[in-house]
Length: 463
Ligand SMILES: Nc1nc2c(ncn2[C@@H]2O[C@H](COP(=O)(O)OP(=O)(O)O)[C@@H](O)[C@H]2O)c(=O)[nH]1
Ligand SMILES: [Mg+2]
Image (cartoon, rainbow, N blue to C red; front, side, top):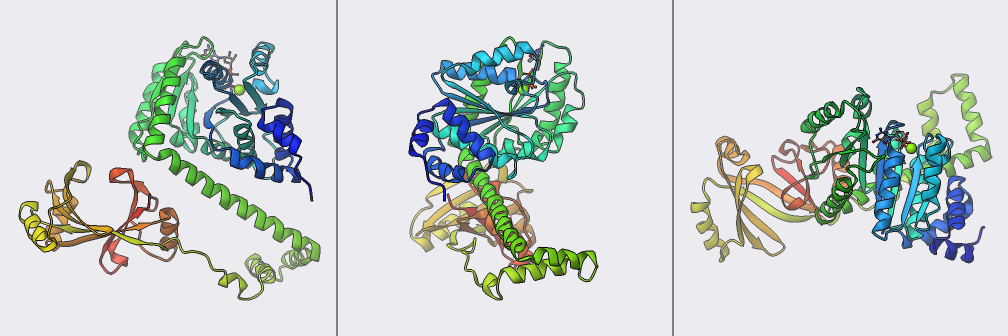
């Protein structure tokens, strides 16, 4: 069992370059000592702002990263740079001019540059990059810039671990947008058209604008399109301002917290999947079960599904697997409010006021839902009287079809995504397969009345 080297740990925390480099190599090589090291470093991380920059090779990512690093240095921030791009000049792969330029940056005391091996990472590229981020973060880097080529699934995963994702496009690569559409295009928070000193920038801008007009912005953020000349620094000030604006927005609107939650959820599931699998396979190899089952497949005596069932049965003795108690994603569910469709608040409010013995706590119009709401707080939950503000409001349509009365029941759940996943696999009809943002920036989703005794259910994530 490896032991933690406290001197080494202290050096990393103090920002010692060589120790940081060794630690990142250790995670890349999946050195068993790295697990212990990360355990010590993890509680000291989580403070850095992680900025992902992605785009095709040659788009100017490294040049832009260098300029951004300078800007943040001037603000007194310590900057970490991770290049997850095999063609990046950080790795010494580019022309001499670039290399000299990068070397000057890398010798700056407040900047740490590292390129990640992009092939042959056993646990995958994104987990290794995540671990490198943890190390840099714990070592005191306040801003971490990650450069990736935004084409493959791996790179999309890397982009997802950033707090903000910037997509770089350049004029003249007409099919850029097509290439990116499948992955990174939708997850970018900022679009940068670099090399606007070259012809064709307007066309790229038009294409991005057209693409964004089709996209649904789930978080309420309208991604800006910026124009830069990374080599001269033109447009850099605006880019930094836009990054600041996104940072403020995501902190205030809870986007940052939600993203981190989504990120760590998928990271945990990946790690579980991988670790469980590795441990199971190690056991199989030891006792020869795998080889025996492979022979059964080769001779077509058994089919693969049958073999998988048998292997799992051998790994998990009967009953054990099914009796593992896991908390249900809907445990701790509470009534948030009951929505009642009324023809007019003017006549309904006084009746309820008499019934409840107090005036409504709030009356407001939710423009996007075309509804006017009067809320009466009752203990931990509340009664909402809903009046449609136009004929095509869902409330007006409900009344036209069914008459006034109970419209929906809203419940809070601690884990909305988990609840949707569970309910969906139990055959409940979901109106929203994924959580979306509702009034007050809460994460909500609706369940279809047809599978829940005719009641429309709104699930709200507990904040
Ligand atoms: N004309 C022009 N050239 C640029 C601009 N930005 C970067 N370059 C050049 O484009 C080449 C590729 O840049 P680099 O930063 O290495 O791109 P990366 O592969 O995306 O990291 C280099 O020779 C840069 O000097 C720009 O805005 N205008
Ligand atoms: Mg590069």
